[in-house]
Image (cartoon, rainbow, N blue to C red; front, side):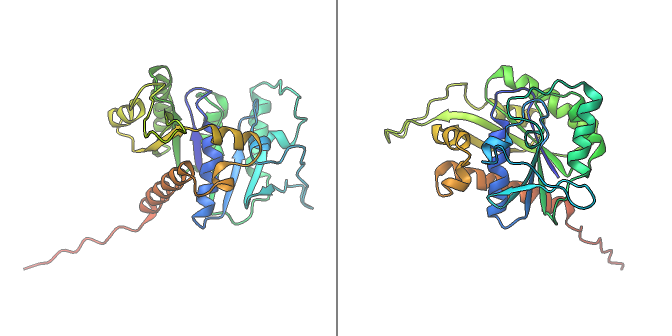
Length: 261
């Protein structure tokens, strides 16, 4: 179980979570995607599952919806698209518990959990009640976003969730003119410096790409719709780096051999 988190909203965390899930699937893993943002679920739109409703098993477990080979669950599947979720904390916690433990997930290799932004009740509930294998933090390069990275990273450390790394989203813009120039609209290298300062692995930079936004809005995430695009290749490199870290964390250590005289 991998949590994708951000200290603040508006950094493209859900877009990263969706494309990472698809990239992991393209690396031959069986992947599920849990949209844990109760108040602002975006997975139905991004995964082209709007107006779909999950069915129930005989034991009243929710059957996840599937698209692009990814099993999906979201509060957006359970309420009307335009209905606000005006719930207090205990109701949110109950809904998260249901989506985690009362869903008939298949034999998955990886469950990607798209956390809501911040460090509130929902994040603490998931980190304390779910055996997370690690967390990924998504940020943009500017200082106002990086200040929240510190808080998010410290939250995971306090609840003993391993930090798999930091991803810098919207890192730079390359004009489509083919002039090989990069424009660092939100600043340059901020997340990399933050990762070095906090001793977190830096997983990579994802550029500002209009195609990523357009395809996600159309329910066709770029990794699925344009798997050979430069941005999709970046997502797969990041996904492979995450897999390498997960495999290294569970690999058996070599025995210590003592040679006596």
